[in-house]
Image 1 (cartoon, helix red, strand yellow):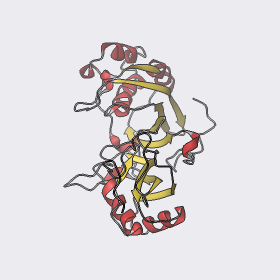
Image 2: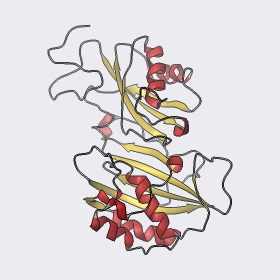
Image 3: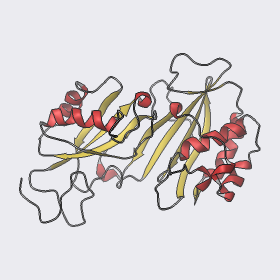
Image 4: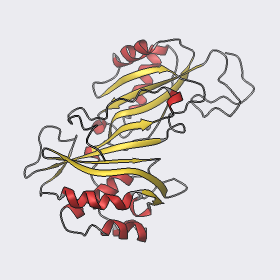
Amino acid sequence: MKTPDWNYIPNCRIPEGQTLPDGVIRYAAIVSYDGSTFCGFQRQKHSPSVQAVLEKALSYVADEPVTVGCAGRTDTAVHASYQVVHFDCMAKRDGRNWVMGANSKLPNSVALVWAGQVTSDFHARFSALSRTYRYVIASQESRPAILSTGVTWVKFPLRQDLMQTACQFLLGEQDFSAFRGAGCQSLSPFRNVYEASVYQSSNLLIFEITANAFVLHMVRNIVGSLIEVGLSRRPVSWIKDLLDGGDRSKSAATASPNGLYLVNVRYPDTAEIPDLPKGPLFLPDLEGRGA
């Protein structure tokens, strides 16, 4: 491979005005996974990760080592129906080759949904305009045996109307220190939430939130506090009080990762990443419900 005149690092954010080295192609892929048996997306030395199994499968198809970058490094046991990755290699493959080949080597809990070539300036993380998560709660008297790691169980009835009203305080750009996990390495606690709502489907409650980005454990920490509101243990205004105070110790415990799904990542139209229906698959079609 021709040596470029800058320090090329696979999957890096290409400096403005530069291109990939000759013969290197940048691809993107949409990946879904059940995160219950993984330590998270990011590769770890002593624990199974989505990144590790994905890179192994893609390397098999490429017949060369492949390293991926992702839109969001989901935590231990968190799921995704729409995770976006990108990777660089010299192998020339079409989308069907990548999907069929990688899926033949991936465990049943991980699957490529789509793959295709993208421009050299595309970056799964830095090109993203927003990310959407869904958190699924089974509000019922007995614990669910089916999908026990796919939903979070709350034994007592939840007031969806109260939780929905509380969501209004999450909107806009503000300091989310009250919902920021310990160990978060982000330089700023400020995030811009575009949409947030709680809606019901049968005995399931779904919290959906879209933002430009998220601090560590932000969604699960918000859900933990919204559940307190839904149980009528706290008033709706408590969410605003937490945000104004910025004290993580005053908010509720972090909700389980079991019900959390990364369901959409939005990019500029020029990126040509397909916009697929939001998951997870066991939910009915909720696209027309409104926010």
